[in-house]
Amino acid sequence: MDKVTRLFDFPQYQLEKFNLKTTFATKYQDKWEIVSSQQYVDRANQLSRGLIRLGVQPNDKIAIIAHNNSADWHIADIGILQTGAQNVPIYPTISAEDYAYILNHSGAKYCIVSDSEILEKLNSVRKEVPELKEVYGLNDLKGVSSLSEVFKLGEDISTQQEVESRKNAVSADDLATLIYTSGTTGKPKAVMLSHNNIVSNVLGSEERVPLVSGDKALSFLPICHIFERMVVYLYQYCGISIHFAESIDKMSENLKEVKPHVMTVVPRLIEKVFEKINAKGSELSGIKKKLFFWAIYVGESFEPYGAKGPWYEFKLSIARKLIFSKWQEGLGGNLKILVSGSAALQPRLARIFGAAGIPVMEGYGLTETSPVIAVNDQNNHGWKIGTVGRMLPNVEVKIAEDGEILCKGPNIMLGYYKDEEKTKEAMEGDYFHTGDIGQIDDDGFLKITDRKKEMFKTSGGKYVAPQMIENQMKQSRFIEQIMVVGEGEKMPCAIIQPNFEFVKQWAQRRKLNITDNKELVKDPKVITRIEKEVTKYNQQFGRWEQVKKFELTSEEWSVEAGHLTPTLKLKRRVIKEKYMDLYNLMYKHE
Image (cartoon, rainbow, N blue to C red; front, side, top):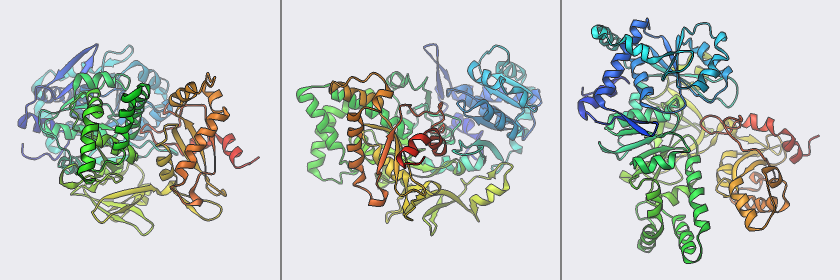
């Protein structure tokens, strides 16, 4: 096979070109279970035969809801697609009502679930989904059939000819998947992505990732999100062995076991890793502590490609030898690259990790663009900190008069499922409206400045871009989350969730008797210290943009509590409603 045109071509291409002993490795009960290229192809074919025996027809929709990434998810994905049916991945953490909405809206005939927690949630709304014929467990689950029963139906290879016939009938431009966006308001929209949408994005991204066959990847971002899913197809295309992390809690352990060369991350993970490293540095004493913070100081002014000159590179080499080499060891010792997406990465952290020899390549895209529009690239002088890189070679971007980023290319979605009106709103000819504001610099690098719909106007008629302010303020070790508000008000204010772990350590060192979060957010010394941070970062903005007042929340913002989307973006409307009392306090509303 010379050319990949459909998603189910990836396993066959990998088998013929690389024939890996380890395509996937998933850990079950302390043991890594390995799936080779040949097993991947064979098991996907077996599942396709079983699904055809079950009565699955082309264009049927089959949903998958899973907590952890696994080889089984990908085998199910290819097994479904080869029958001409479409895969509908669903975020496990959304509400049971959203499960019902997505299953009904997509018309899913079957649903595959990974565990009893998801099954229980699904069962609570099962009666509301009349078209759903059957639920299968990826593993054996009480009360439902196991997917192994469908594999058993596929043991008879006489129907393989039907599988081949179904595959041949699927064209590159046919619908492959429906991905429901984690909307910050209202019901999620169903993005229709074709085989070619995603395949073109894999092929366009391939030259930006410095990987070779035999390298290892660690995968942990939700596979139901297009970012991780596209990247896993990319790993398959490049002959990379994919290990699936057990959980975020076991990430550190898995990194040391797998020793990966590449990982995809979201900025929040980079922030968390840095917070842990920083906390360990704070526990040091004497010369060791001074060296640690000197190395970070050196890292904060890092620029790629030796741009800071020989004296800086000399200091950097010392910092790498004495301090940063230990960071690499903690992340397995082999990391060549981290690829970051989903939200803006703090430039300070990009510099520090770059200095540490753990380069973070920031990219940009949306579900509707399959997802990558632009990404940084260590090669060809394609890495510029503070930008999301240059556009992929097969993607075109233009900036509208109001600053919005418009995008055109083979990666642009087919549209929103069952919603022509929203599709028309999103498209201008062949160009997709991203809803983001940005600019392209003289070297062709794209910089995102804000979300168009998140910008607001104060009562004085001045525009404020909240995301820019939030990204700067989140660089403070005292601030975990922040949402800038002020639409129609006389000034910007902010609702802040402190970094409780760090602030408690800070309070302890100052002999402050703080036992819980509620006490912490009311303590005058804590408030004064956070005010000092806000004042420091305010200096980077015009007077009309500066945060004039803030209030602290004692709750940790999370996906489960409804503050964040599954991709860790702020649910602005929800947060404002939750903390309306604090909002009114800042603006003296009755």
